[in-house]
Length: 190
Image 1 (cartoon, rainbow, N blue to C red):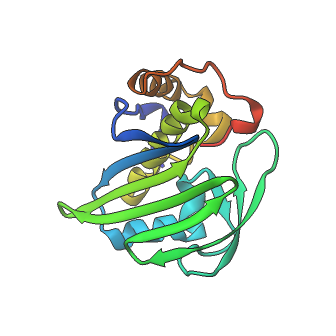
Image 2 (image 1 turned 90 degrees about the horizontal axis):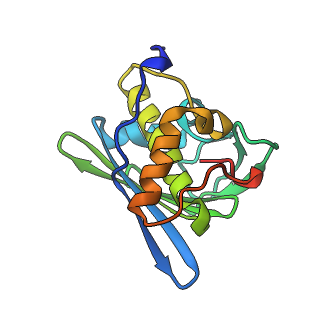
């Protein structure tokens, strides 16, 4: 693992929001230098998820109909969600629910790597925080897949990280929202 102090996230980019009635969706896109098959494993297998994702999984998310417990990491209180995978078209589309968040992952072969797109519903006041959290998670994922892991940064640990604070402010400005100072305890997950 390389020294985490050397990590600085790039500028806020690759995120957008959509509103449908009262429902907000955060869409985060990242181009990774790794094959869709390799990214798919990182999105579905517990051994990989525990290295970068804001939750641990007690089983693989790679098969439709599988029921898995997702446990939020670094949250103020233990939060366990039981989810059933509703779509798993390897290595292209993965869908399940994490708590009250619908999660849709799309993987597209692109330029020798993968364009990864996450679609997730989110409360309006948490959009900038969520974008900042997923931005850091995707950075950690990319480094993990490159063989230069920096370790998972999620929840309260990510919020204390200076790069998260900057990203939170940048995404809030990008989405024309007020910058929240700190999230309520119930929202402290990526």
